[in-house]
Each structure stands twice: as structure tokens, then as C-alpha cells.
Image (cartoon, rainbow, N blue to C red; front, top):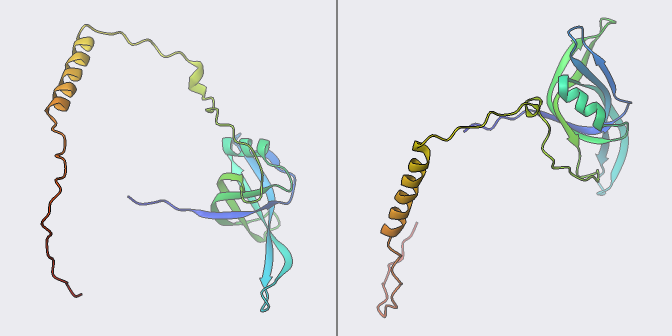
Length: 173
């Protein structure tokens, strides 16, 4: 199995989140984000440097959720990819297009709400499944088969206390 990986970006939200909509009506979140920078000194200390900044954008439902969750100053970890684009002034800029974002739990204290998210389909009722006359019989047959297999299993024999020891020769590698 191949494990999919993506680029990540961690840092802090440096601007107020801005939620706008594209010409197609998709939500677009814009954040100016920063990364703290430090320099490791020869004596083992760290010198705090100025942070570096970049733009982070998200789209659609993820953008709307992130807009509700993040504020200026929040620490985050995001997954996505870096892209270069041409700005309105004609200059090329780099931005991070995030597909996922969350608060950095190494820095941020928070509580987790494990309530399942509501889905659009949850409002619709699922039609009740009619039980046919074959289903109870099939269930009973399956239960009988499991019981028969369990009865056929023999328990592992108890290990006997053997007084003879096996001599093994040393193997060199």
C-alpha cells in the first residue's frame, strides 16, 4: 500500500481571515501566515530572527470551516501544496494552497468535540428494510455453522514438563 504524502506548512495566522467567493460561487479563504525563525548559535543558544511570511488560501467548504475556526494569532498546521501565481500587478508570488488545516496541538490548548458532523443526507429518512421470510432462516443457519465450527475446535494441549533438554550447537554468522 502506498502512503500518500503532501507538503505541510506550520506557523501562525498573521492577518484576520478573509472569506470571499470566486466568480463560480466557491468560498475562498485568504490568510497571511508567518513562520517563526531561529538561528542556532555555537554556544547552544538560539537567537530569535524575524519571521517569514507567505499567503495561505483554501477553497470551498474547507475554507468556510477554517474561517469559523481560525483567528489572527492562532498556531496551525496545514496540508496542501505550494504554488506560484501571477498577481494583479504582474509580479510572481508564492502561496500555499491548503486542503486541510488544524490548530497546532504542540502550542495550542483546546478541547475536542467528537460529535459526528452533520451531513446533508442526514436530513433524509432511510427507507425501512423489509425482512423477507428467508432472512431469519439464513441468520439461523449462519449461527448454527459458527457454533459447529467452535465445537470442532480442540483446545491446545497443555505443555508437558519434560525432563530431557535439547542440546543445540552454536551457530556462527
